[in-house]
Length: 238
Image 1: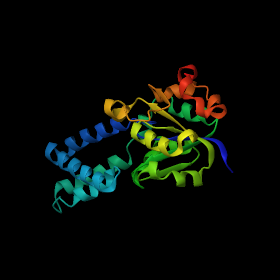
Image 2 (image 1 turned 45 degrees about the horizontal axis):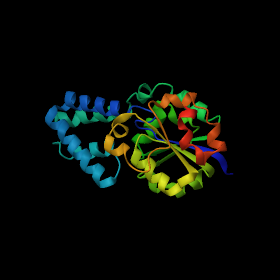
Image 3 (image 1 turned 45 degrees about the vertical axis):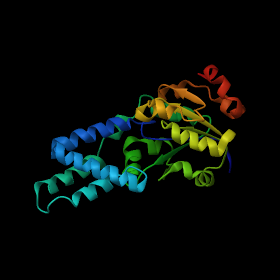
Image 4 (image 1 turned 180 degrees about the vertical axis):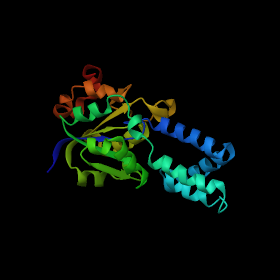
């Protein structure tokens, strides 16, 4: 059945503080392995991201493991590092009012997580943070979500979509495909949303907010009534 309105929600730096997680991982690597080994991990990580097209912390750990001599103390510390990733307290990294926002959006339409990432840590992140349950298990994780809009429509057909994402590039790419069927919302959180060059990407977001929590106070009736005419009236809605 086709829904009137579906809200598509990114995760990292949109619903939870992904930059804080990366900072904590940097600190943990330096503490456990030292600066040189930590830098080696990030070199492997960057190479794998270039190869795969998405971040894979556990995959980088597997590749980094190949550089470590069997039986060394570093090998044992790697086991603790995997636990750090799997058991990380992602619920503590949710932005303020995120669960309230999801509940508020759910009063107007269907809420769906639409994220990029791997098939192990990203779902684990959603489960440990409480986001999986908050959207009733409606979760889609792809390598490049902006290229998977046909699949999104098959899973959750709707008359109109709203994409909430901290990456202007993603919002722009989706807008070019769905055009007036899509309203884009940019929360200015994280390094992507605060980069002057990426923010200038055309087309710009229909609605820009400073914090994700602002959506909990937004009257979204207009999204259902006049999705095409939203942009000129953004300030009235806020």
